[in-house]
Length: 117
Image 1 (cartoon, rainbow, N blue to C red):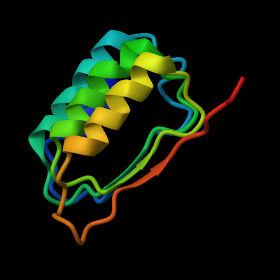
Image 2: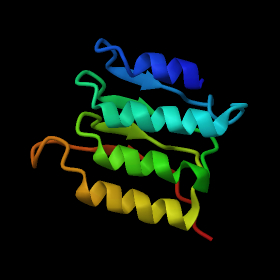
Image 3: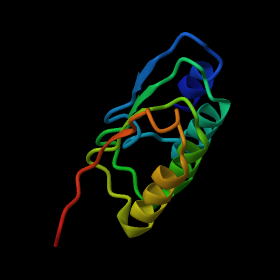
């Protein structure tokens, strides 16, 4: 998966990236998260939609959220079905607060499942 993400970060023709269910069983999870961070920091001008639904992301994915906070092109994020916990929720809220994607007219859509106890 890390190899694919590194290759994708060099293209300028990708608008939608759906990695649903793919990071859960990644053998090189650390390298995959690092490659994802590089992908988000590149600010690929055409990448606007990212889906990481049901990837079983946990606290180790917090660097991914921080990288997303610095990205200025992704406007639609799907994080449904992940388990990042309270720390992930705090980072996610901070990311949404500080990410000024397209100014006030741009809508950042975020899909998350929250389980109340």
